[in-house]
Length: 164
Image 1: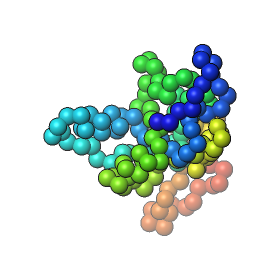
Image 2 (image 1 turned 135 degrees about the vertical axis):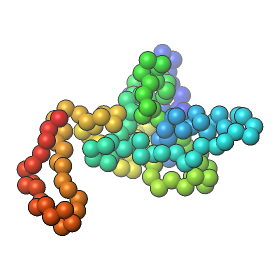
Image 3 (image 1 turned 60 degrees about the vertical axis):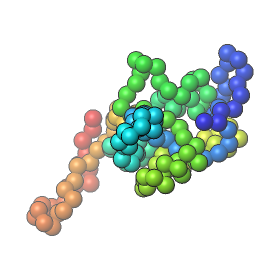
């Protein structure tokens, strides 16, 4: 991972990565992949499940807190501390690394971003309402039956919302 230099003991206000294209990959998958490469004859994992990087409520990318802190320059390390680990932890891979992974395991979707002069530019803006894959306070979720004609049910009112 290409990281720009930092002043010792001081976090910068800009992204510490060098200019380029990057993707977020679930850390659990990368660990299984690396383990399979290190142990001769071990079974390789299937394709990475990048849907874990999307919020359940809106289907938009969710950037884990540890990645946000690293990209803002407020954390010196990308990976979370032991007590802060979650099933949604991700690692950042370069565009070249992603192309190599995608050549072996074609993946339809990945959370992508570019770094341009210290600024992060998301391919799809992250969900503003969800945090680490959980619904934020006051998020409205509308429940609708998908096949109205087959079930014989009428469409719900547009105002039929449930707030969590």
